[in-house]
Image (tube, rainbow, N blue to C red; front, top):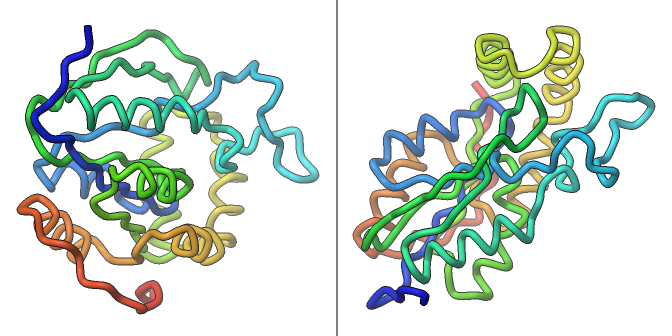
Length: 216
């Protein structure tokens, strides 16, 4: 039997290019976090997209991600405070198990990942969305942080990481433009933390028509 909370929780969707600092901001917020990277498709899935002109799987394309399962997990967390999610090993491109995520009676949590902007409309239409944020650190800083992180964690081979990193650095402004067009507010780390703090106490974020911050 499902357990229903007195009132549904809401979610802040936190997106941005790979390496932009989403996990760090989420951790610093003090809020419960749902890792959207755990909803990648497995490496033998025939629907996985390829990088144009290459045999590399395009793990930065939304079609490499299980959107419906991610949205269902967010909805269940909002409704009951608990859900089961896959455990995904990026180095193996495979799900290696399942784990429970429990936010208790916390009224707000973060769902962070590079595809978070893809589900802004669905979460808003379901009444689940508190805010949607897109982090921007600048292409060079993001490239360096992403490469060092992926190398340290052994996520993929070094040649793959270099090819992917170079491609993403050239595409970063386009990536941010797409995510903001889907409804995510472009911001740096400090503004993101401020908006998360406001959402945590029930304040609505100020509307803004600003474009993404210029990279330093």
